Image 1 (cartoon, rainbow, N blue to C red):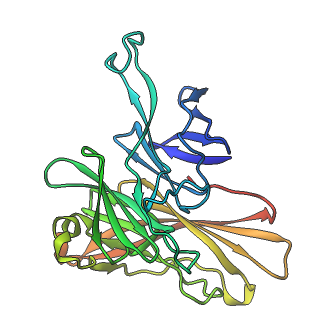
Image 2 (image 1 turned 135 degrees about the horizontal axis):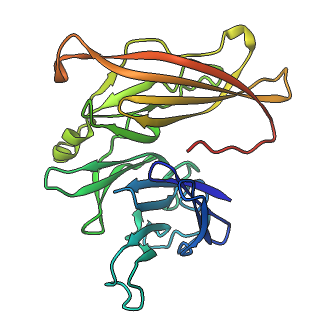
Length: 299
């Protein structure tokens, strides 16, 4: 099973055949959803306008959806249509699954990581439309125009964060966790960063990567003597400029996995707008001990 966040609180689950269900905690209901056009493994899921879920495979050849035309065809949209235009028999609206234009991909590369999606986010354009930005390993960053159902190359550069980036209107910036260092023992990694992707998209013809803004303040990391080695990190946007940073660790001397959850808030200092710096304020943090064989999702 795979689990994906829809909006701020709903959860979509899909199985190995692409069948899907929706859990709505506000209504305390579970209902079936349209099946995805193909199964999704390690999916990248982005919510747009609260009720549109765009889902794609992070790994282009799992399952084997990539055709010889050099595209990965595992890209779907789950959307709720509240009028009867899609079906005259349905006056109240319902969920629909649409197959979207294939994501650009490349075959016959010796690097098994080639084409894997490393980062993704959504960006509102100056013309009133919206785009999805996706960075693929070894290929660069692509933009998907939702209105035109079309992909275009933004540049050979990669988005500066790992996983999903979150837009914070209060600061007019996108926030994410930086990519990991090559040292697997380095716990002081996946740090919170900020970037202006709106300007980068408008100037995409320059093919220049956006400038990454670092944040002052210290991340919560375990002491070196604990012997913890990082596995993965996730960033959850809690609204406004507040986040939860979830970090998972393993330890050779223990049969457990450890989860470190830290609440942080981003504030400006030293001026308004771009003239001011960004400071990370640490709030409460907690450590949880988990069974090593436990599978987990952070949504």
